[in-house]
Image 1 (cartoon, rainbow over the protein chains, first blue to last red):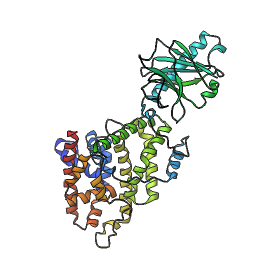
Image 2: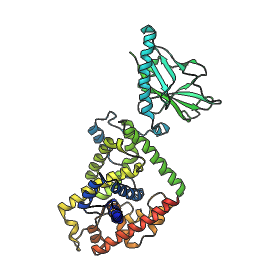
Image 3: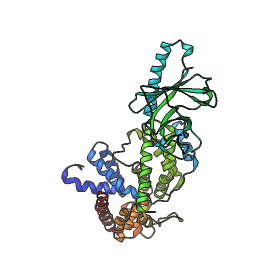
Length: 239
Length: 201
């Protein structure tokens, strides 16, 4: 069936409409799906109709599926968070699409810098916990480091990184699958210390990454990041 | 709720889902779990109405999400809204399965008084009611309003319960040709109206 020629557009539109609505015969469904995989015009016609009609589906009252559905999905895929779908409110950190890319960049940068530091200094003096916080341009902006037993993080600004006037940087620990936890406002200065409640190794347990957001003076008023997240990086443990 | 407010809420949900799907594309399990939590009940309800069998609906849902996990990387936010994409995945699976089962059982095509009535979920809205309240935007509701009675009913039953042309004819007790032209005219009208409304926004 030639459906992409200009004279066939009307016919294609009708067939696509009935496919999206669901009234097409199984034979037409099969053929149209097959054609759509190689013909962009046909695929677009289907997509357009699916888009038009999808809004109708909003009216269907939701029905919560039994918990075994998620259990089976995660078992099939061998996912780690197997049992529960937790009710954690979604906030900005769920919307940060560049997130994993940023932490991946941070990881590479951390390895490079870590190796460089190890090269420059005797090994024992190198901080075994290093986080290179980089922005979307992948350029390191801040480096946080600590020894395992330090009760503080040393934060070093790279290349004069500083917040805009009237704003502060706040440092956040990003627990696996949880909400960010504030580690405090980063004091002004080229190299500063930020106190930790417990030794770094303990404070950063189950924390794969850190991030820096821009906040009003005194830090986030809500306990969660409110400003844009400028930098992030994964925690590298060199022990 | 105002149409404006509702549209924004739906837009926000789609934005959030698009970001989550981007992370699922990079094998982020937590994001995948969030996608399920945000969409599972809606998609399950959509499938349930079409297949009318809980265990089959559960199976379709499982397959669909396994598919989402494997194919989120190819999801193209520029081509389809996340909810459109997800809804299409489960609806198509549900429809394909329903059609296959009908070929096996034939019962639907008997077309006489013996045809079993379609059973609606007793506590929920009917398909036409859903069509009338459909969507979060006034413009879509206005478009639905313009449909004639027969078209409205046929499209509602087809969309929400996955009835084929033959099933529609049997259920509405009208000749197949009449039902087909109701569907065709209704879709044509919806397209013109929805596209005009979309262009105006």
